Image 1 (tube, rainbow, N blue to C red):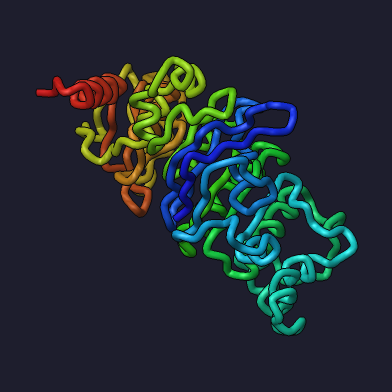
Image 2: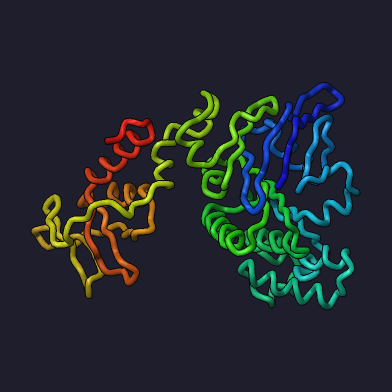
Length: 347
């Protein structure tokens, strides 16, 4: 658990970077700091490992004041991942990952053995350990950066815009890998991003910072989308927050119509029970645009129903066989009822 207790940072020229910050990042969860440039989110992150010293207030990790600890020893116990990975260019990938364990007294052979295991854990091959950072792609370098941060098995990890320097496809892959790893390891993670979509996707809790280093709201992603604290937060989250909020609503209870139902002149075509497209009266085959399962969100179903030429999404079982279809109108009604329930007016 990381606690900020009335923490401020004011520089010598009088600039207030962070003002009276009080919040708690829970243990074993991902807390994301998000906000516009210059709002104090990175400064707040760096005060945790004393790369920036607070002007006033207290920061505690599991109850212990960070300013009472030796900075070098503190940082060795905290994993740190930055944009562009920050790898040592003159060291091999394996030795980059082994850096902190060696500093902690682990033998070089044992540290390299663990490093090889970590590379595989973050989706790289052990053979890549012999390469140098310049021989890797940007996405591979970021994976190495995550592996290096995990090498000493720290209880706390700090991540400063770790995925912002890669292309969207690689970024999506890294985000999924990151969530998988967190599901296995359960670290206490604080991450900085300027991307509200990334914050909502990755964070268990999201701290929205406003200009002047003010904490505008601290909430779960679902609550942030449903009930912004003020106009600034509502504007920062975006006008499509209602649609994005559907990511937290289950589609499991949506009523299904039979797969034989004709919708908008189209009939679902199956092959061994698996949907392969919609067919019109002239025999023309149109795509389903994807399918969904009982574990998917209402947002996923809404997207499929919008894209579908029939205006309906197809639900499948674990084997990919069609169970039924859901029309756009049914999805819209589910959305309406959800909002009424949220406002306290549900029937």
